Amino acid sequence: MINPSAADPSFNRRRFLGTVANASLGSALLAAASGCRTSTGGAAPARAGSTLPLIVSTWPFGKPANEKALQVLQAGGGRLDAIVDGISVTEHDLSVSSVGAGGDPNAEGVVSLDACIMDGPTHKCGSVAAVEGILPVIGLARAVMEKTRHVMLVGDGARRFALANGFKDTDLLTEAARRRWQEWKARQTGGQPASAPPDSHDTIAMVILGSDGQLAGGCSTSGLSYKLPGRVGDSPIIGSGLYVDNDVGAAGATGVGENILRFCGTFQVVELMRAGASPAEACAETIRRIQRKHPAGTDLAINFLAIDRRGRFGAAGTGDGFPYAVTYPGYSEVLKSVAVPARA
Ligand code: ASP
Image (cartoon, rainbow, N blue to C red):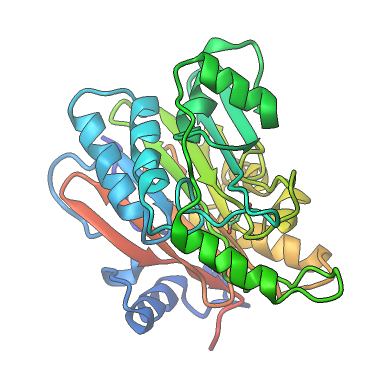
């Protein structure tokens, strides 16, 4: 049986010691400091019985999404049903200001969504970008995958495809988001857009290892707050915001999309796992590679999570790392990722 095991049982400590004294200990300490729960070593506790399916997703809002996905799988649903229903929880949660309804709009006050989905066994994927007034866009991405011969639809074409396929026109801009946008707009001077607050973006990226050993993943976001109309980040781009290789594992990303897009971030994570890295090590090494090439060096906000076919999972983020949700039968917690670089 495949077991979701410690976030990093085969962690290459020698290589990682330069930045993280002890990845597991680092995770545990950060988790304690941030109020995130973790068990020994940032890993899920060993437990008897079935430990699959395994569902891992970004940020604390990933936890209810994971739990929905688990429920779908346990009721006999497929892995893509689980991805769509799980991520839809976040897309419909009006308190989440970076995904779906309730998400922050672009510079013109319009909510513009990006999403993608990828299936391990078939290596099929579907993606939508800069879509307005449609929910859930993760379901729309699946429809693109299953009902067209294309991988990606954008903008008005994606919206018209949605309306022709049973999706309803939906007002995604909440009063709270409209107020935040108006305040931002009022701060603009001399035609120069004021920059958005630094933490005004996030994504749900979810990866699943089913009880049958098959992988899948999905990603959904409203992108950077007050972005230029038409801007698309990493999240709907296969190999940047999400990548699944059924022979190896799956990875998802969150953070400033431009800095993930330039490096095909999640493709790198999966390829590093293929070369033998554990999930957290692959995430951390991808970040270090980006930091080495990017002019901003370590001053970046990028995060990755990953699972492999063996049921191992892990995550790494810049700065202090980031919280991510891990769920399997009998277990559902928010853990803290490895931090790159680590703070001593
Ligand atoms: N990656 C997303 C984007 O750039 C935002 C985030 O995940 O923080 O659109």
